[in-house]
Image (cartoon, rainbow over all chains, first blue to last red; front, side, top):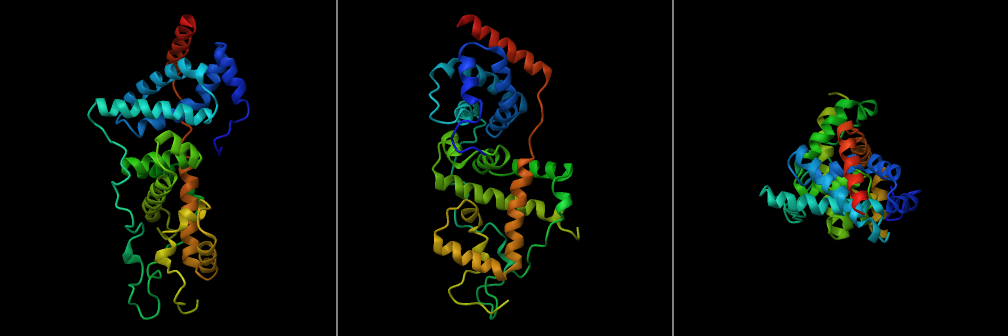
Length: 211
Length: 85
């Protein structure tokens, strides 16, 4: 995870790219292309469109690299280019999933209230009545769980999906997410909270030891 | 487990604080109360651990590589750009 600072070798790569160095470009492609596709894909509805958006974004990166000042990390600079293009592409195709921080009423519980004793319970108000069971650690990183996580993320409302993809899939810092999506720090944290809780809930039946 | 102390957070409240906690954004008092709660509440510890596990598994959703066709297209794009520079 980086926090807005450049990764090792990043400045050298940027300098080489400005000189038109092809290996430097390919190194960037290896480092960022798949991530850029995932970022694009949270805005547009098909892999093919995401591919096109990312191709355009690469061109914009090449054209803009001379003016890149390194105030943001290279990654969040590139991700913003992808996000902006993907967003306008989605709008153009009228399949817009505009960024909305209000799509999900804040303050609504992220865990099913039925899992807790009611507030008027004589002994344990608000405490678990149907507590989480420990997960089978060995099941966690198997292919099936990873695929399930992917589809769980896909079902999230767009703004939550955008934030969890950047934060937890791509490992961006909160600052990078705010820069890429143009949201406040508090906002990205609320969205992340709701997104993680929902993905956890979707994994739960699958990872329960007794399952 | 002991009986509920009036100003102690409930489990239902704790689960809404885990992200702020993990992000290091809880005010010190709330953080202390949460950590005290975790000392005696196995279930909330499990919940917190599952959020951490969720983050880990989300971090492994990646690493698909791209096709050689994509690579060729990008190389072409790069050479065009360089030619026009």
